[in-house]
Image 1 (cartoon, rainbow, N blue to C red):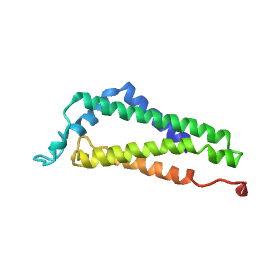
Image 2 (image 1 turned 30 degrees about the vertical axis):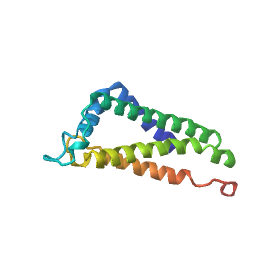
Image 3 (image 1 turned 120 degrees about the horizontal axis):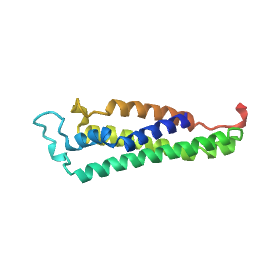
Image 4 (image 1 turned 90 degrees about the vertical axis):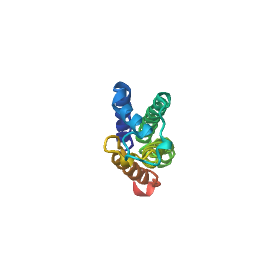
Length: 155
C-alpha cells in the first residue's frame, strides 16, 4: 500500500512538473477566488500576486515530492524487513511521515485552507475538494493499517 501511494504521489508530482500550467490554473483560481459566488463578502482573503501563486504551487509540488520520497524509501525499507517484526516496525517511521505529509497537504492544504479559507467549495471551475477527500480517506486507511504493531505471534 505504501509503495502504491509512493507511485501515485510520484505521478502527481511528475504531472505538475511536466505540465505545470494544468494545475497552476487551479491554484490561481483558488487563491484569487475569482470563481466563487458573486458578491462574496470574503473576497478580502483573495491573493492576487502571481509571485505568491507560483510560490504556493511550488510548495505543493515540493510537498508531493517529499511524500513520494518518504513513501518510496519507507516502502522499500518495509519490504526489506518484512521477515523481521522489530525492524519492520522501526521501518514504519518514514512512510508514516510521508503519509502524514500527504494528510497535511490534501486535508489541511486543499480541504481546509483551499476549501474553507479560499472558499473553493463555491467554485464549479476550481474545486479539488472531492479529489482531496478521496486522498485523505486513502491515506487514513493506509495509516490505520500501517500503525498496527507487527510481532512474531502472527507468523
